[in-house]
Image 1 (cartoon, rainbow, N blue to C red):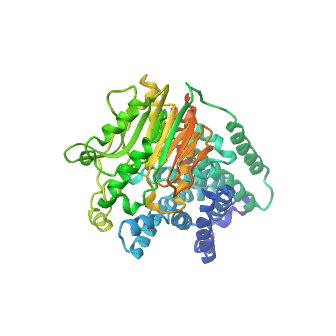
Image 2: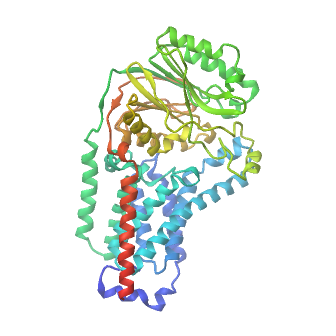
Image 3: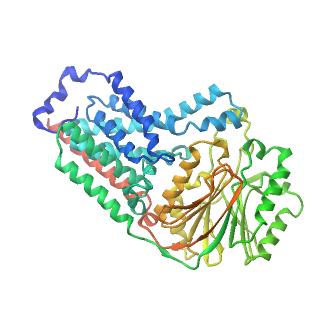
Length: 526
């Protein structure tokens, strides 16, 4: 137990406490708290729930006598959250991938529990740092939040990254959203966990700790104040956009008998009316570029040129034998050469096969399983006097990559992206919370970069998000429709665009390293 007074610190070394085990009630409470945390995210948006559940976790953390107990707490909590929040992966594996239901459920449980190991290890390390210090305040306000945030960040890149439900995403509409442009999603998660640590510390000491209360007020107050600070400014004129939502059933999307219908559907939706920008979802055209009917793309390009429009079409592109890319092809009235954006951050199993996993993909029967990668730094496309930077599907999950693309364009003297565009097809996940969760991820990207995000999706959520993370307009999911909106581009540099995750990760790492050194010296002197 980490205690905050010298009067009780000596109990840490008693044999009775050293041999205590985590009670079943504690583990059950931790599991339930982790699962309940999903209500903090979209579509529910009850962000205070997350602060409460993390406070409970930290309350348990600052009472553990051994690092292994901290590991179990972190693992149980995070595994429960991930299972509750990503259950929709079962739909893609079973309904569309052909995996038996029981095996799909086991696969998602294994994935969640495997990712949960990161949080277990983080709290294990935190306990090793905190135990020699014997101070509940440091454990609750500095060590546990820093370790938790670093686990969130690690999940963003390990095994190509899957940071869905990272702590900060729950706060796109909370007072903490103001930190996004400065510290990014992981900085928000860190601040949120510090607030939870303050509550846990007060609960531990049994009275209203003035330091904890003051810290909560300051952190929330600064976040609220930052929401009113605008890092970017309007650029150029407003453009008219048309975002297409074809609502093509996933089981029909790649079937031969329905391909002709899909091609006709998007041809008709595209040519229905001109606009400054017309965007289709990811792989709206379900055939490889080499397999299309004669003049299909040429006719679409002719429509764009004739109507002074810019058209972006999602298509699997084949620039050469054996090369397949998940791409957006662009045709613009001002450009003779087609624009192309190639997805660079690919989905394991869905778009590329990890080494040694071919047997699993063969069982899933998912088409288009092996794509090549595009470059990380790709040009944006000119739409009137705006510059649109695309990303495909869950590429908008990686905010540091989008920020780096914008910063690189500015540093190289290239046209500065003023609008972001996400094109997706997450019909793989059915009518589930995956759709609003993905929309919330896009909202976080607008907060970090100070730029609007346009979303063109197959089944939802097709939407326009402004630079403050607010959804201005949105189509009902699972409908066939076109979203027409006027959008203002923004230019400028937020601190997050310039620095990315480096300040947050670096500061937390240095803090933990310093506390570890202090604890080591205390152990030697004791």
